[in-house]
Length: 90
Image 1 (cartoon, rainbow, N blue to C red):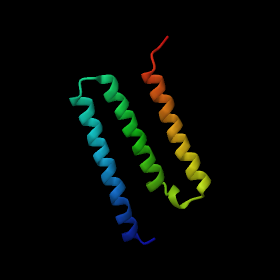
Image 2: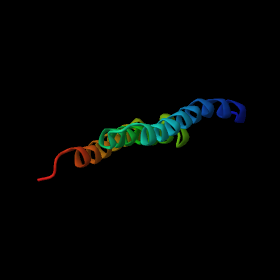
Image 3: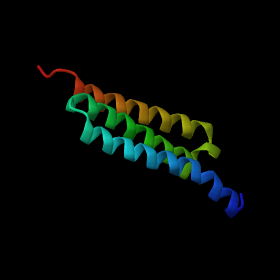
Image 4: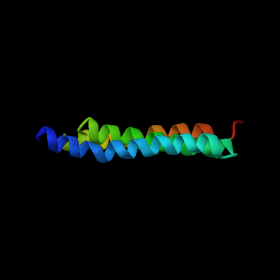
């Protein structure tokens, strides 16, 4: 892949990362319910991790097993963190 094509391919994910970062900042400052805004920020962070792994680490063009393993890892890590944060403690 040429440098120009690679640059264009990285612009879309980069723009999404910027928008997701701005959305996280807005959520932390403008919503009153801290518990749910924090949960949304965790979900946005998970989305950003997936974008970086898939697009910038080029897992898309790697072996399918690696992509599947990393997608499952992001999903499970996010689920465990959210469950630990949102479920009531005993």
